[in-house]
Image 1 (tube, rainbow, N blue to C red):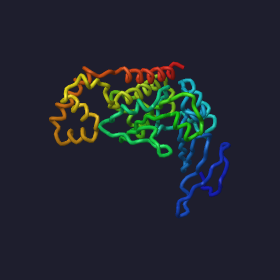
Image 2: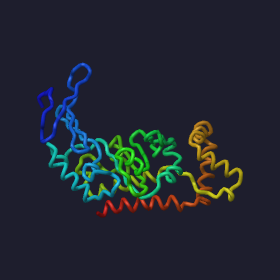
Image 3: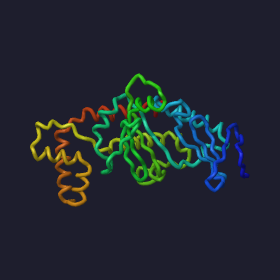
Length: 281
């Protein structure tokens, strides 16, 4: 399109030019509810939460039918066929009714990486793992909504989310989902695969076992303590790989024998139930 240096209206939206420090036009910005729109040359980028666009929040359930309706609505408002648009990044998540703190207190690591605290008003309300192709995070949704939107929710909510930064992560290997365009996001089979992708990522978080220490020996207590400290564990893995493999086998055997999975099973079951609700409705 022809370069314009003043704000202009297009498809019912106000577009504002943005310039770099040298005075050259870099992008046109616009907004559609919560969505941020960026126009560079002939490329239009849309970012932010589809659920918030459709429902105004992302703490209530978001069903497959509503996802389809949200894209239908968006397609009518934007100046291109949204179903043909390329998907560059995607975030998938779900919310369960559960206090976040006991859940997060059990998280140790993900792929041997330590979590970073998510802060709001200088207080931790969640944890986030930064990986190359995606990030994994869990946080107190009740606190986040209160601090960011000044809304008091009546229950304690926990949100688990995976932010895929490189879409190729979903499109290779034996678990290839095949997300290339928006059309893929409303494919029922691929929608289910995305749901299972979310569950798989939660399951891969290394969590503290619930073990009655009175039933363990001194050697076993030391072993448990080692695997709770990711920095110590990574040091052993790097400097003493043979010992690490031996310790890992013993630790896995110990947790299999003594771990009480009641709490973790209840959390994963709630996540599965919420996801299944989204698939079925």
